[in-house]
Amino acid sequence: MKRIFLIMLTLSIPLLVFAQQTRENERAAQIYGLGVLVGIAENAALEDAKPSYVAEKLQFAIYSANMIGCVSSDPIWELREKMLTATSSNELYGEIEAYRRDVLYLEILENCACAIDFGCCTAANIEGTWDSNFGELNLQVSQNQVWGTYDYNGGGRIEGTLECNELKGTYRQDNASGEFTLTFNESCNSFTARYWDPASKQYLTDWSGKKVDHPGF
Image 1 (cartoon, rainbow, N blue to C red):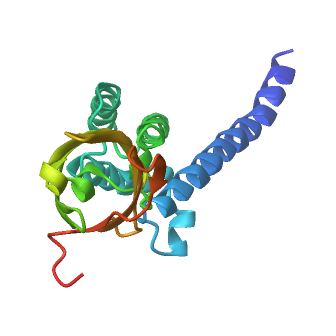
Image 2: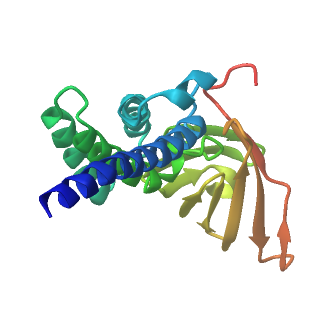
C-alpha cells in the first residue's frame, strides 16, 4: 500500500507542476497583454518574462496614471495599498506572492480605464484654458466631473462628465441654455462641439476650440 501511495505521489507531482506552470503562463499572457496596452511592452522579449517582472513594469504605469489623475477613487487606493503590501512582503519573487501581486495589478488596471486606454483624454488634458471661436473657455476637472466658464455673449457656465474623448453636459447663460457635447481630438488639445440652440430649436456645430498651452497648434 505504501509503495502504491509513493508511486501515485511521484506521478502527481509533475501534473501539479504542469498545472502551476500553465496558470503562470496564462497570467503572464494576460499581464503582457495589458503591458502592450499601457505601452510598456516595447519588444517581444517581454513575452517570455516572468509575471512578477512585467508586474513591476505595470507598477510604473499605475503610478503614472495616478500622476495624471486617473487613479483617484477610494476603491483604487485600497487596491493600491494591498498591492504595496504584497510587494513589500514578497521575497525573491516567490511564486505565490508574485501571483497574488499580479492579480492585484490586474484589478487596479481593469478599474482604471485611462491607464489602459491612451486614446482617452484625462483630467490633465482637459483642465485649463481653451481659445474658442466663442471666446475663452476655462475648465476645471475632478476625476471625470467637469465644470467651467466661458466669455461668449455675456458669459456663461457649463458642467458635465468626461467620457473618454467626449465631454457631455449642459450650458447656461442669461439668454439660453441646453445640452452640449465637446468631442476632443486624439491629442486632446482641440475640440469640436454640438450644442442645443433654443433660438433656432436645433443642434448647432459651429463651436470649436484649441488648448491655449499648445503654442503653434
